[in-house]
Length: 357
Ligand SMILES: Cc1cc2nc3c(=O)[nH]c(=O)nc-3n(C[C@H](O)[C@H](O)[C@H](O)COP(=O)(O)O)c2cc1C
Image (cartoon, rainbow, N blue to C red):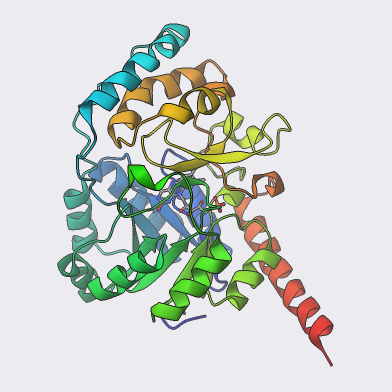
């Protein structure tokens, strides 16, 4: 494993930050205790809420962990497109008996306040999604002894992150569950992306930073494959969703392996930014015309998502999942880390036997 990650964890296994409740402190602590490294998700939380979780992890384990921050988003959405989408969602509001949210509510995720807390009381690793922090912020974290990780989805974003002073990269392939971390959401670009193995190779060819590979990885053999492709570690989200320590909604956990949900897609239907989730009724109906408008669409649909969950209706929930979801295993997080590590070892041995002269 690369120098930057050595000493932080025994295995090159990273539990992804998962905003919305899944990556709660119990999960992060259990992964750390088992020899991986877990991330808290600060997205959608107040700065105090984030800090309480940091303190909770520290009370539970002495192992290293990380915190993930959403980068602030420029307000570029076309208000008339948001208004049209509001009308298109009117039937959902009636169906679930809840009003649509205010798209113009303050969408500030508290980035500045969160950065200030994490500089005042540093944690081992801080990662960023939806953009790249300024050199000043990255340098301040480095001076505080915190490893910074910038999530990228293209070689250009990787070059920018290296230039800005990132300590490491999380390279996110299109297979990944949840939001694509694209630094600028281009409405014209379409809902596509580059597969992980190609992206890791492309980034390796142009950037000299430790790489954590993310997207669709569910088995130890797949982790071995991305390490062979040039990554230093692997970040898994969907694989950890069904763990008892994960705070994902029970219906979300069940849906991952429910034969009703056969496939995933990238959609703007719930948040206005491309995110990969299981294809359900809401995604099928609203995905085709949902506008590029984050966080306005996230705010519009917030009450609908809560109401669908309360009604036990998985067809109206945001069921974020990566392409490997059907390989999800419901195991305690520590056991899952141990199993992944054993599978990695077995895969390495199998490859050396097959490639022996
Ligand atoms: C439910 C869910 C929530 C996520 N939330 C975040 C987040 O808050 N910040 C972030 O950087 N990535 C987030 N991600 C993306 C992960 O960091 C990672 O890229 C992804 O889980 C990897 O793909 P996989 O789910 O197929 O393992 C989320 C993923 C999921 C499944």
